[in-house]
Length: 75
Picture 1 (cartoon, helix red, strand yellow):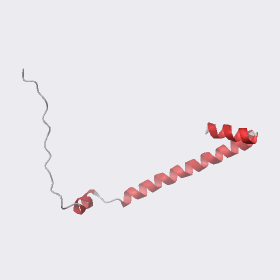
Picture 2 (spheres, rainbow, N blue to C red):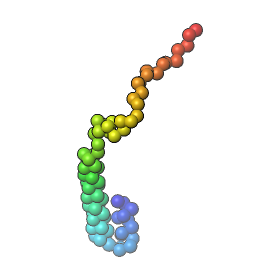
Picture 3 (cartoon, helix red, strand yellow):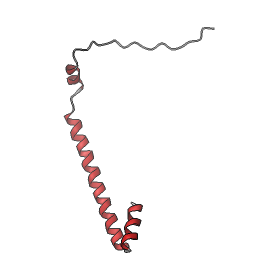
Picture 4 (tube, rainbow, N blue to C red):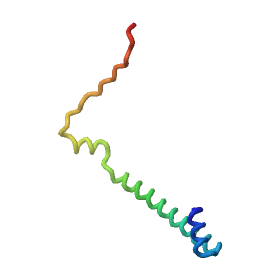
């Protein structure tokens, strides 16, 4: 935001114009951020659930989980 403010001021030589442009950019960034969060929430609601994923990959065999052995020094 500071770079935008300084760049606009250098080009226009008007602090008022620089402030308006910076506030406009800030507002645009906020709207884009809010829209992207809404999109991610919408996309996650459309994602298949865990049970549905298991049905899709039903041809694979389930491998039992084995606890890992801890290394022990037997001295």
